[in-house]
View 1 (spheres, rainbow, N blue to C red):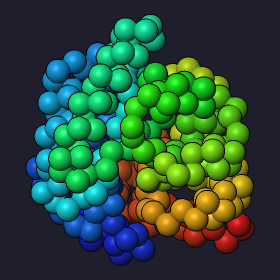
View 2 (tube, rainbow, N blue to C red; view 1 turned 180 degrees about the vertical axis):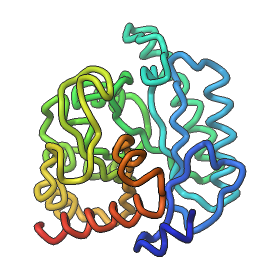
View 3 (cartoon, rainbow, N blue to C red; view 1 turned 90 degrees about the vertical axis):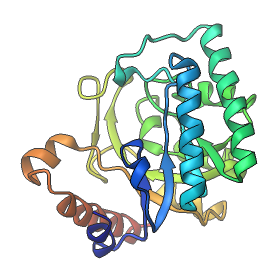
Length: 239
């Protein structure tokens, strides 16, 4: 798999928990993304293990979510106790990450407490974490994506490239993650804002056009990687 990604023109991989026991380079980040609201002590313990595995593999950044992860069927808790649970977990995780010299970055994501500009600000004001900037999640909520890049300039540790269209709700029903350039992410403004703040970190493509992947690309990861790299090159040409 790594060879096909490198052959397509990518510089590295952002790994998921499915690959936690077989991490190899070149690596850009590790997406732990446990449900810190409903997962309790187990979610914290799992994140600790991911931090340790990332450290052992030389991966500098671990990607976190607040939870609840609604796409996993989690209880959609949004009350103050849910916020307290997420903040408690983030505090413990940051402490462990600092011991390992691993950076932790929170991704504001649909279906979680931190899902739009306002809710992300509320968590980020109290959690000493960096940020994974994925513009697709702010499409549904109508937030100013280039403006958020500028607002969070000093905290953006990692960037995801993903597009979307629709309204807040459930993936595949109310909104869709689509091929890059087909959605409503303002790519010229997004890249211009990243240049403006001097962002020099990695940008990971998240290929979540699952029906296209299955029905058109026949679930071929090498084909998906090649197509995604072409899309990124085309988007960068119009900036």
